[in-house]
Amino acid sequence: MNTTIEKQENNIVKVDIVVPAKDAVNYYNNAAKRLAQYVNIPGFRKGKAPRNIVEQNIGEERIKHEALENALPKIFTDVIKENDFDVVAQPYVESYDFNIGEDLKIVAKIELRPEVTLGQYKGLTIDVEEYKTPEDALQNSVNAMLEQYATTVVVTDRKTKSDDIVVFDFDGYSNGEKIEHGDAKNYTLDLAHSSFIPGFAEQLVDRTLGEDFEIEVKFPEEYHEKKLAGQPATFKCKINEIKTKVLPELNDEFAQKVGPFKTVDDLKADVQKYLDTQKADIDRMNSEKAIFEKITSEAKVEIQQSMIDREANELAEEYKQKLASQGFTWEQAVEAQGYDNIMNSLKEDAAVRVKNSLVIDKIAKEEKITVTQADFGAKLSELSQMYQIDAQTMIKQLSQTPGVFNALSQQALNEKVTKFLADNNKVNLK
Image (cartoon, rainbow, N blue to C red; front, side, top):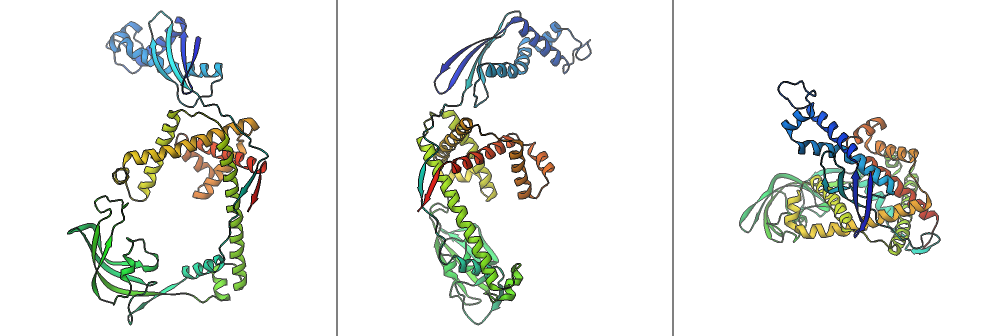
């Protein structure tokens, strides 16, 4: 096999491949034999008809396509290996000339990884703003624990307060039309933690048990249902029940109930330990981010648009899955935000992700950082613990999803490069 390489723009190489006639005929004959296994030809058992009879029944072109489909993976593998190409996408055939008894001529395009020129990535000193734990963080954390163990009691002798839980009926209208799914009976709402339209929960305060009333609100401009976005609405409401939270007393008995503590001081010490660990983690992550952003900002690389487009398409799929998990559809998002706005935003994120990945791979290559079997096993162990599935079951499930193992390997490599950069650069927390 002979090849001629021609470098083109956007990290594309054009490859003219000449496969000797003898090899081309073998590919063709083998393809004819395979196809004969699946074709009923009168007078012959499957797979036993001679080539000329097979050609008469299914045609030369179909046999040639079958031959190419089976031959191209090996042909491309040999070309890539022979030329030491760093490929980022599946090679594709631009044209071919396949005549039986003659050399097979193929013109293919192969997209290569862009060359990255790194700036200084070791021995840097970077100033990073230190994370400050809020002064009331300890008290807020303890209060949150008390809230978690709070009980509720029904009250009947007063109006609703902003920290009550109310059970109420509501029926919504906008521009004279009833709002679809805008009504409910005996709906329970925590007024202090409402996810309703802004201004809705606030108007349920200072209301009397059994009171019928109307409230006026306005849907947010970015509301997911375009028909209602930015529109005024009226809700007819009735309070059926008022509940108030009763917090437990913060004492040693409470501390013993929520964990392996003997006293309130033991509980507070454990919470403070968590807050200190959280601060250290935030400072570490901010430092790693600052180091990497400094290094990537000084790295030079010309990224072809095709890489960004592929990454953007992957991000779009992730976005669709996220929308589905929240009860929305891609079509609703497009209607609300506009297709071009969504895709332009995704392409901006994709450009950053592609450059980051290229820089990480370049540093790994320069420093001979690789992913070992132990590294990969650790990632699998993390996943099995996260989803509470044993490692073998996890491997079996992941093997059914193409690309997952590569993604895990890349994640492990990212973490090793990140640690290398943290160990070889200095951060001043200020």
